View 1 (cartoon, rainbow, N blue to C red):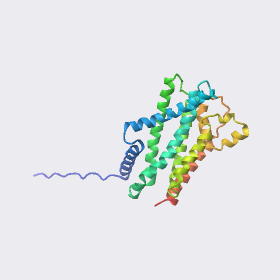
View 2: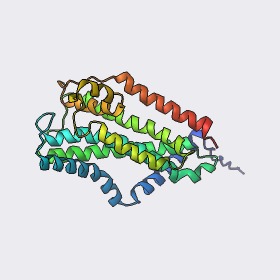
View 3: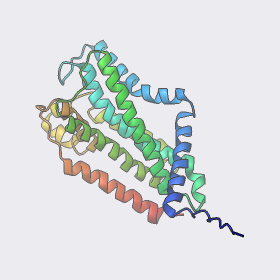
View 4: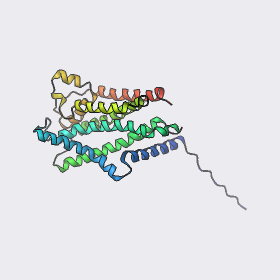
Length: 262
């Protein structure tokens, strides 16, 4: 007579639990971000295109030529796309924390988990958005391939990294001051008007240009445009931009650890 032994199921490791929590948060993020429908995804993908069309239409209405190259569409896209990536990621990370705030009372869910989940969703959305923009430019006969692909790509990645870093800081601030979300919306409008999206900052008078370069988004927008026009009189302080990103991440995580820890 033989006896059968049944192996007990292996207990999930801490890594397994973390990945399960992260995947659940990502799915919840996608539903809250896009309304759980394909139309929500489509609206998200098309919004940068609408943004570029509106600015391009305003340039045509006023009879303005492109200050960079021969294509006004390409000029608008190289300024709007990196800034919108920064804006959406920093804003949506803040909104993502508000969506998941109640879940952080469970011991398995940490505030940093909500940050990581929303950051991953926004990174994927940003790359999908730039794919739609590229297809839109091609359909209008514009060559969207940069002269220096590495320069343009790293500039766009820097815009996303800045969005994540500022988003982490925003989460720390809004946990203390709930009205910060509304204040930040006003700040992004000011940044949009002053970051060289609709004009070339490098063509401003030297004294003004020196002041504008203290805004890291000015340099990130120029970083991307330098990939398309390497001969532009642009001077990018890469160490300054990276310093902003790492300093903001450090401040945000320190706030999460010591200031706003539950």
